[in-house]
Amino acid sequence: MSLAAWLLLFFLSALWGGSFLFAKVAVAEIPPLMLVFLRVLIAAAVLHLVLRLSRHRFPRDPKLLASFLVMGLLNNVIPFSLIFWGQTGIAAGLASILNATTPIFTFLIAAVVLHQEPVTANRIAGVLLGLSGVALMLSSSLAGLSSDPLWAQAACLGAALSYGFAGAFGRRFKGTPPLITATGQITGSTLLMLPVALFSAGSWSPADVSLLVWGNVLALAVLATALGYMIFFRLLGEAGATNTSTVTLLVPVCALGFGYLLLGERLYPVQFAGLGILLCGLVLLDGRVLKLLRR
Image (cartoon, rainbow, N blue to C red; front, side, top):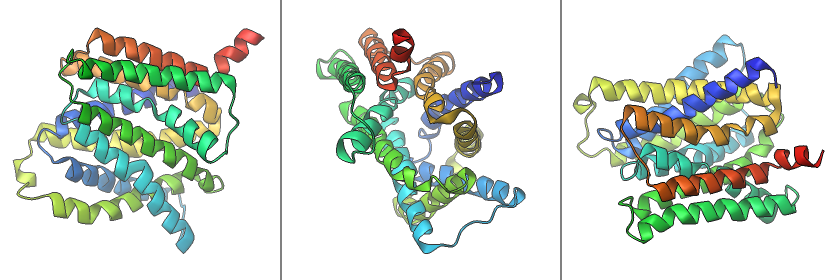
């Protein structure tokens, strides 16, 4: 990759790592489902503006629009809702670690269930090692060594599973311009979340939200979502899917750093050990290190 691509990759890692921090601050005053709606609504508005300025036309094909709804459900509505709900009970750093299991679920769905990818020895070893790291992290709660609730950790793992289905489903958008795909799925997410947010709002009022939290909502929507998607799809075009996937290894590191420096969050030693095992599993699953060693 070029130096510019590496810089974009690190910047994207910081944006997506920061999204867990923004969400952790925001869920203290905004219900999780309402926060999901605000995130996708603002991001959709920004992306439609960018789409218009770039002179792209938003498609009107019913089949493509229906696919955007499904992609929005799998890639935004379900995972955002589960992550925000989970972050009401666990730290931003731990949520990001559990979310880093996405490539494992993506491989299991694409290769084992749908047979879209080859099953190799290094990938099987990577999956087993990664799942061992997750099991180690969860064991601290099961043994009473940490106060992190299992339901919150399971919610974040459920989000990663939904991302895995989204990765397999998203292959159908290969011939669609990336900006249109990003705008379409976020727009679909907004439409799906509107009735859910209104139904779940209850007595919540925007007037009860502090300026600090509104700032985090804007950062979550504009920076981590709209800008993040634009950078992500640009990297896909310039550096390829394999190189871009490296962001998965960097996001939890950024989230842990932000959580420690800005929120004072700390993880237990067993959770750091689980993170190390998980990252080793992801490296094995990726396979590039093994190729270099063979050479």
